[in-house]
Length: 248
Figure (cartoon, rainbow, N blue to C red):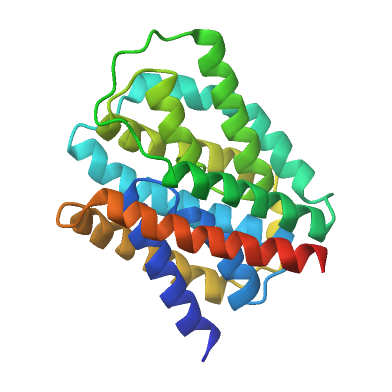
């Protein structure tokens, strides 16, 4: 099977998950780039940032039209993560491949376990603490910069738990945060972008964008809880494989 066909298939699945779940789908981009398309870990995290940025920006426009984006709050949250995202992007190029793969796998395990944890049916208002909000934003930025993931699986719970947003607003606002952090991380990864296979990344990103639109429609027809559990189990299996591969 050609690399372009694999890129289209992987991009469609990742976009579908991102659109249906409002975050988390992009965490599969790195393992897909490494194990299906043969990218080195550093190149995979850089390519993932490109894919995450364009897919999140496209999905953001749809959520904004529905009025589910809190622009001021999202920009303030993202601002706390810009510096760590840029530092993380610079650090990623200096980390050994095995360390980068192991760190990514551990974050993926944490993401899958968080997705499997049942959420309360309603969210009570939470008092916003600026210090906690800044810390959460900075942590999300660092994860985005180093590992090349959007961090929606971290952003949504943080926006709900720290800033007291309702779920739909948190999903839409998280796409704004992800887009800003991804672009900030890419700003200091110019050197690692040299030699990337854009003939593969382009179709991958295009399929992810189309998949995100389909995923958004799918989320209105199927149980979000069921979709999230299936995705979390797949992610947990992928993370386990990556950990075994990294230490072998």
